[in-house]
Image (cartoon, rainbow, N blue to C red):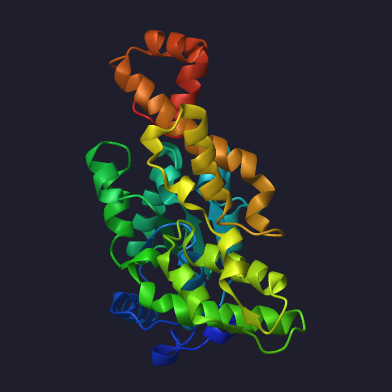
Length: 339
C-alpha cells in the first residue's frame, strides 16, 4: 500500500491528498477514492483493516487534507479500562476528546470499547449530527477496526446505532498479502529511505530477494515490511540486498504450521510472535504492550466462559477462578452482556 512519506507530505487537499500512497494494485484504488472523498466532507469515517496496514496514516491524511483547524489526536481503546475511556471521551479539560476540539479524534480498535463509552460516543454523534456543539466539543471522529462492527452489533457486542453512524463513510484497507504487486515498490521505497537515513547511500534489492518478500504472507502488513527492510539494509554488506539478507528476517516455513496443530502454549507464542513482528524497536506502541495484549485476551476469554456457563455468573466466576463481584465488574468494564 502505502506510504509513508512524512505526514507533512499528505497535507494537501483534493486530488493530491492521496499522493503519499505507493501502489500499483487495483485493490488500492477504492482506498484512494475513499480517502479523497473523506477530505471533502466532515462526517465520521470508519477505516477497516488489519493492524499494520496503514490505517492511522490514512486517518492522518484525512485530517490533514480536510478543513479542520484543530489537532489530530489518537486514542487506543484496547489498552484502557472503561473508567479511563469514559474520562477521555467526556468534556474534561484533560481528556483527549477535549484536546481534539475543532480537530480529529482517531479511535483505534473501536470494537474494544466497553458499552459505557460506546453510549457516550453515540450521544456525542447525535448532538453533532444536529450541529449542536453548545454542550459538547466539536470533533470529527475517525475509527479504526480490524473487526466487522455490523456483525458485532448483530451479536449484541457493539451498539447498533454507533456502528451505523461510524459506518457512514467506510474505507476498507486490504492486507498486504492481497496486493502482492505492491511489495517490490514498497520494499524499494523503504530500503532507499532507510539507507538515506543511516547514510548508506543508494541500495538495490535483487530480484531473488524480492521473490522471497513476495512469497511471504506478511501478517504484520506494511508495518512489518518496513521493519524487515530496515533490518535488511543494516545486514546488507554491499549496495545490494540479497536473499540471504532477507531470509533470517521473515518467518521460516516451520512457523506456518496450522495453529490448531500446535500445543496451546506454542499456539499463543506463535500468535504473540506475529503480533510483536508488527512493531519495531523504538515504536511508541510498545510502551503499553502488556496492557494491550492482556486487554485483547481478557474480553474473548470472559465472553467464551459466559457462553459456556449459559450466562450463569456464579458458574462462570468459578471457572475463571474469581469471585462473582469481580466478574460483574469485568462484565461492566468490558461491555459484555451479563445474560
